[in-house]
Image: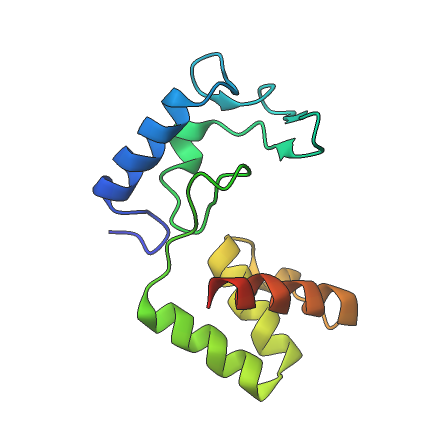
Length: 123
């Protein structure tokens, strides 16, 4: 199984939650397909095809109805990288867990800080 794919049980729970959501459009999209939508409270719906997004272990619902799935090993890696305060290592870890190309890395302090905050939220 790919390291990016959530287990079938997780996928089924997520997609069931999505299908019950009043913001699901065209039977598969979170908000306006591909563009997303902004709710009255300012929450941004992603516009993703939920049949795809719900399969990705690192994806989360923009309405916090389901979260990213990371194992103990991944969480330990995140904690160790943050403890070492290595900007490159933190960015590479972030890229790995959110599914972007690691060479898109940065040493930009605000970008790394944002990545650290998101990774800390997983701990």
